[in-house]
Length: 374
Image 1 (cartoon, one colour):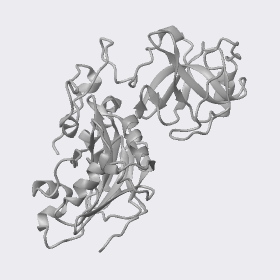
Image 2 (image 1 turned 60 degrees about the horizontal axis):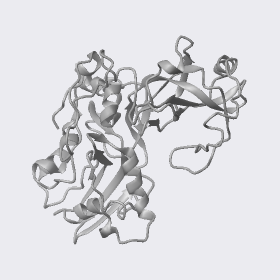
Image 3 (image 1 turned 135 degrees about the horizontal axis):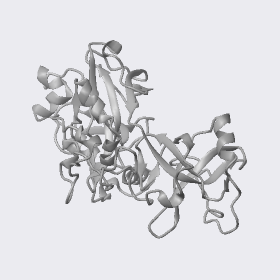
Image 4 (image 1 turned 180 degrees about the vertical axis):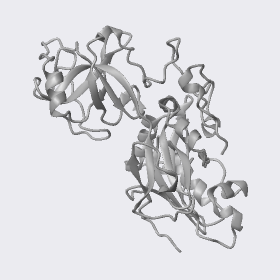
């Protein structure tokens, strides 16, 4: 079968927990879900390569080293994986987003320079049989074992052990840039455009102060949450999903409009990650602390996806909250001594990263994390 871009990748259905063993054909295989961009690499004979985004856009100008590695392959392949940027011992989605914007520039792609290492760690697409590829090498791991694939391609950790997959859902893995688990059937065919796989995101809860709202102050539609940094500045960290009617009454009864000294009076907030559309918000007196839950996708201290409101924490004051930091502050990701807990990073994250990567923690929540061999 010959695949010509653009091709829709196989999609994943979001679930709140791992599925039962017989949910997919042939039993279940679990893969770590890195925090990156989904991409398909088409490598053809004669030194041709094309890097496609999930939506069909050409990513080759933004990631010339990946396109160049595709042109250097000895055999025609189609690879489905994630583009990620590893920096300072974790995956950095912010830097990845900056790289992706380069495809809109007019400069020569080959002149693009970046100190970070771009990786392609998870390869889902089984290549079509080619005479130049031995039978055992037609799987992703076989391609690495036979030397067909090498740096900058990196194989993501995978397992058939359910307990290991459960460990990967510990929120502490978010510190390394692992946002959950992708589940596939061992006997499953690739299904372009269909939700044939299952995706389970790691979830955790945290607290923040309500600093602004959308809608009416007395019955807010969504909450804009913040924390104070070490210098006493109120930093935006998250926005909630729309509140239920009960939550609107519960929170709205405690909120008051802010005075003219509120630091967010003249500030603009985007309606979503990657968009310039602004939302109409109303600052409130920042003295009500709430607990929220969501995934572990955090960039520069901000949660990328809308959070789910849980409850008011009237037992806490804004001064008792952890300071705003460049990384996530989640229940399950702090040690019993109160310091920042870090995890055993997956092996592919250790490769070619600078200085100290991630060190093991003694906290109970992170002791369960296991380094799984590829």
